[in-house]
Length: 297
Length: 216
Image (cartoon, rainbow over all chains, first blue to last red; front, side):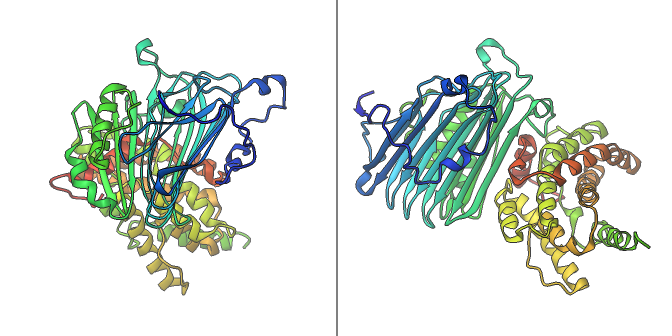
């Protein structure tokens, strides 16, 4: 990974510009401040790009990192990384990506995020995205793999200026396929919210529990992986025909809809790999450019 | 006499939620039509499982929480309506809740002299029902019965099933309606959500069906 690495363990503690502390302070766990809580993973990584795709902000703390590999196109890529290797009870991570007016930015994650089994409460991951006037921001994290007995609260919030463009995806994989793991108990609260000029325009609050996993065809329906892709942009509806033409193959159940400046695709499959391939095909059509190079397909 | 006001409110609310009230609910299947065509819902048992999952983990539960907040005098109707619209899983889902909510507001405004703007169905019902002083758990359970009743009737017509079979499915879902209503009545907004992925996929797939009886 050649490129412009940021400072290691940068010291910004109070510079959250997106009100990032709010969700983290919601009381995800109520344990007293003990030695074990001090040993839990903490991290915050923040990247901001301003006119001319110049880095205006690059801050890292704890086990959250963000770097910008040398880019060969007009779209800079910011790659977020959790150096602790996964999330477990009591961990708190925050990623922030900001594209100022007119800026293009692709943000992704270095690898799949792993939510490990937890006996010590909830892990919290907050993702805050901001796109200024005319900015184009893509948030394309790699999949989140839920281990049995994992407990994750994630909140992804995107704040868009009136004419900003956003493409985002989220992929959930249920268990480690290589181990044949079948989830019996899991707790996931995964709130995804896109606001335009302050008003919510797309809210998808995903919640998974043991009861959900046991549900029928209207719920998970035996799938091992599922994903949502959304484009929120002026004229976003226009992508629908091309996106529908890119859906498939049959082993992946997928459908799309477009309305009110949104084009949304959902898919589920019996395994992660065909789902990721189908997701990549949709993103290719929706974005018209290559996926981040760190994506492992 | 002490129960006269709640009894009157309940009578009004059941009128508003009856299939005869002009909301047009019979026209929407909430994606069930696509699920039947795909062979996922084929009989009374699979219909009951599908509708039960939607009640507990899909729009049933989410609408119930939105309705609970809209029923409260402290509920911010504009913010709840925006949130409800933003949560619509597809183009037709938004149409389903907004067209019925608009019809409800139009008719109840005319009946009561209120001047509420168009809102999604759960928010519209909550705001319009505030003066009725109905117990929230009861109001939410009645709403869920109307919501599930539309889906069950769509199943009766499209699978098809006998009328009695359909009513047996609806009766078997009463415990789910009551437990969702009890939870939703006290739930904060950040308890919204579920994982009705199959239901949301069906709602989207409905848009591209060749022939359709229902609007959703």
